[in-house]
Image (cartoon, rainbow, N blue to C red):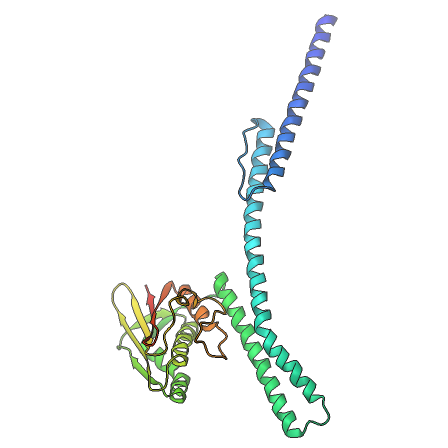
Length: 298
């Protein structure tokens, strides 16, 4: 009896050693797998280890690593976005900050007269206003790109909407000696966020006016059927070169014929607003003949 008991104890001891060694190997395999993850751009496959608790542990580790990799990817994209955004801001602010610094030095010069001081102060104020507007625009654009800016849709007559946004644009067109033509049929009704949709249309129309020579025109027209509403904003201005067309909706992109004061954010914002309305915007252009923007809302 004692010999049998001793044999059983020996067997239990050996099994325990075998199980421990097996477990150690399984743990080593898991550690090796986790180490591999650091060297892979995608998630490497994990071999099935066992059933039971080690199998559960294996499964949970795989889940956690998958989630962490997804978060890393998202965080990496977010960091890149923020890095690009900060680079853009730094680039855009460099010129006005240099101008402010220079004029501030001039203001500290005791020989500067009152009239000049007033001139420099006005220029500093203008540069500060420009940077404030740019920051607000960038915040809006980043919210649009992230999809966190809520659009509050309501019914609006397109004709009335265009009339409301046209007042400052008519002045701009008059100063530029550009004919401003509106050809919007009655009874075209949209479901849009009126404030932001007007912002999008205004940015596109401004762009057309800025790139149209004296004596030219900017025309806004529209049509509607059971499937979608189409809004066309076109000019007979300078046009856009083919190599620039794919990039004109990118943040801070400025084509070769952009004005000196252009920041390159209006069209980027317009596209994001239209996308937020489940719409799309397309552009056609030919050098010397003009540009045509077509907005489609479904």
